[in-house]
Amino acid sequence: MSKNDFDSAGPSTALLGPDDPAPFVVENPGAGSPFLLLGDHAGREIPRALGGLDVAPGELDRHIAWDIGVASVGADLARRLDATFIRQRYSRLVVDCNREPGHAGAMPAVSDGTAIPGNTDLSPEAAAQRRSAIFAPYHDRIAAELDARAARGKPTVLVALHSFTPVMAGFVRPWRYGVVHADDSAFSAAVLRRLRGELGEAAGDNQPYGMDGHDFTIPHHAWGRRLEYLELEINQGLIGEAEGQEAAAAFVAGLLSAALAEIGL
Image (cartoon, rainbow, N blue to C red; front, side, top):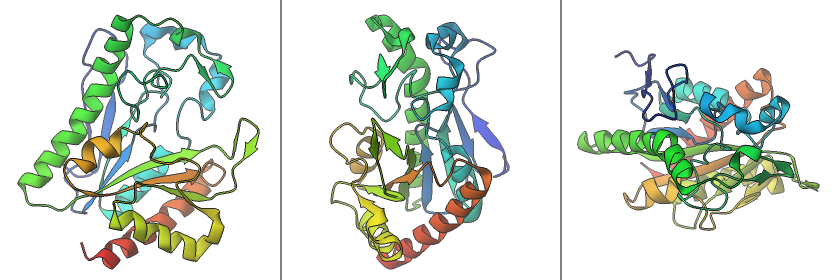
């Protein structure tokens, strides 16, 4: 398979019909970089069987449905760094792939003041079906990629890409970038130092989010394997349009490469 091909999983349970897209996409498979890029909230698809979760279509354009800009920034980064990018296609409103299974926020009934009727009074069976169809294949694919890289003796730095809304619940969030970490990654620390050098207080240290026990992807995949990691948050005001996405990808590519050289991996 060419490194420019897309490697997609097939539908895995009855929740996803033949007209539904696969739950994840792998861009630039087999790439040579130590970086493995992830997009837990990069998509906003809704399985047809869920009827749009009875949410007004315009709401699915908002940050409540996905991490705006991450799919494009991640794809650009994959090209610039010769890195593999695994991204989720389905909306975080269907199932949040960065939350522990069973977490109250994994299938929210309300998100930033917007009711999600399709998530109200979900049965355990319906919730399990979503995890089986979407959450599990995505994380299984990440694990398979990490296993294959380990078998080849290839070092890996896991980079989870996220974006955040500039205003949440009326609170203005002034940060341009944020590093989410648990004080256990030399790479995260190196990236944060460089961001602070470039942006000062506009670089958030565990802002606007901290790694407080709700995250799933980095703890699940990086900690057990003792991998260096970065969970990077980007202000959506920077990457809402194509020009900003390209500029952010160029900036982040340089940042990651410099931090990698600093830690000597």
